[in-house]
Image (cartoon, helix red, strand yellow):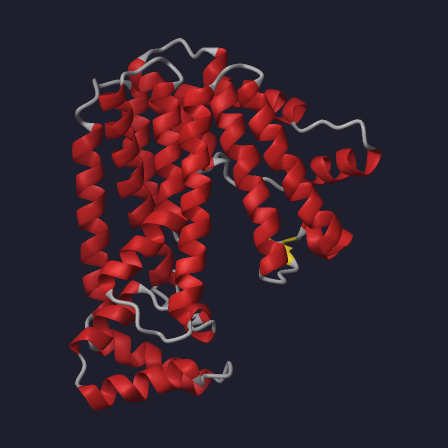
Length: 325
């Protein structure tokens, strides 16, 4: 039985199959250990939403996809995979999407070098084909992702994140990558700067909505059952909690921040924070923000001509905010 994503992917199914072959080739190495690790990374790939955005956006501008679009999608996947490998080392994480992480199987030293290798493969793929415009778009996204991560770490110590800072963090950490996918897609088929910027802005709105949806999972829903509270456990300030704290009186605010700072993984403290957020309307407010971003993204999408790819993109962004995991 096909998944909703398989149905959404229909207008670019041929391109995605072709991309898988090209992407596998772009990761090859003569070093046996590296080749083995690359094979492992390719095998455990996720939903591949990033290449999907690249191909859909390219097809909004023209139906025939040039080689540059495949290279753009591969560049994003190579650089993004490099950041994930490095992230797992930074976070001391042993799992990624239910599989062992590279650092869990081959230790940190090798994982760092594998991340470096993937970065260099991405850079060379662009430089060898004179894809300077695409490289600039994606390099900016990688810089923003690093800055967003560091900004979050800096703010996490004091838990003093305002809504404005929160949006800065997720714009850089999450939205910049989807924005770059969309910009690369239209840029790879020769679109002008104004169109590339419109595509980038569309991707940014989708990325922000996607991250808010992720934040909401921490509080549980009817579909996914009990709250998980992982963000609270890790002392991450997300939109539902930020909104609830903004509305609280000084004493309540102090008590809740104390519970977050000193939760030590204790479920009663985490649940107390979750209850506070729910009673303060934090979830409703976050859903409202997510829906507004979704509407803004649709408005931008509808400035492109109607096509099967545009229909699929509508379904894809609806999927990102209605998904259950």
